[in-house]
Image 1 (tube, rainbow, N blue to C red):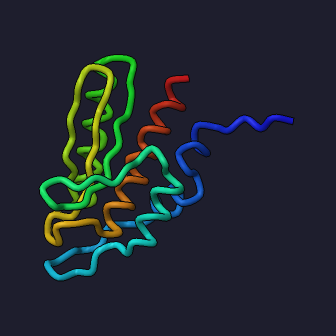
Image 2 (tube, rainbow, N blue to C red; image 1 turned 120 degrees about the horizontal axis):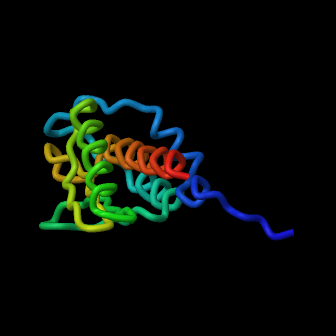
Length: 134
């Protein structure tokens, strides 16, 4: 029997749920970055995210698709509200039908566990929006 994967499984529901339930911690200059194994595991479990280096700073990035600009803008605003709540802010590019989200920790010029948490929480917002529109 062929197994059909749900949208949540394709996004990596187990680790996403684990990270999505966590809170960001205060991060200072000198705070240790996420370990290579934490990053590898996150990317393996959430394959829609990719690690990119921009200006010598590692980041995680994902582009989300939407039916129109208004829906993309609504998602952008929800991610912005989450960022304010958690005190951790991404780079957001909103275009017609898509939003690109990049997470990294400015104070350490790299990836911290907070970025993985926020990536998972961003996925959760996307999933909640998708499930409410069906």
